[in-house]
Length: 116
Image 1: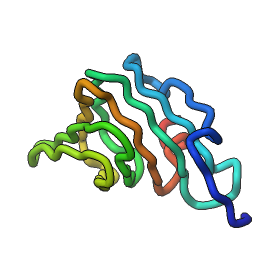
Image 2: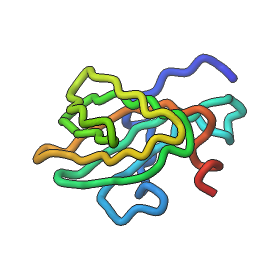
Image 3: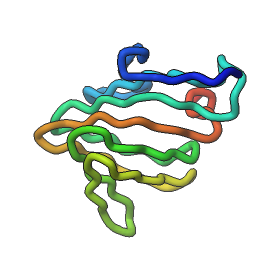
Image 4: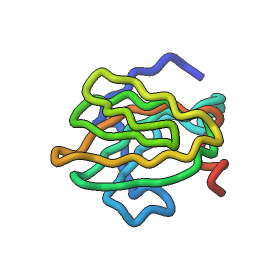
């Protein structure tokens, strides 16, 4: 694997697998590239909600907008520059506010095979 730089323009955003909400993801590095992690961007439309039990460890960096991440332990509100770690096995609910959100993410291992 070679050193690479990415921007949002490099991502081909597609609806998040198994979701009805207006949530889109675009992997830039994943199992097809031979590395141990998945790296990509996520775009969340305003007033969306996503609930799932994490199949992988996920680190999300909020680039634009705000979102709330809730577990049974409580809720955090994340905005631009904030980083949220969602450990494997944690039941989370993500909710966007009126402006939606743009995130970057890193998962270990790859999230697509874990959802297969």
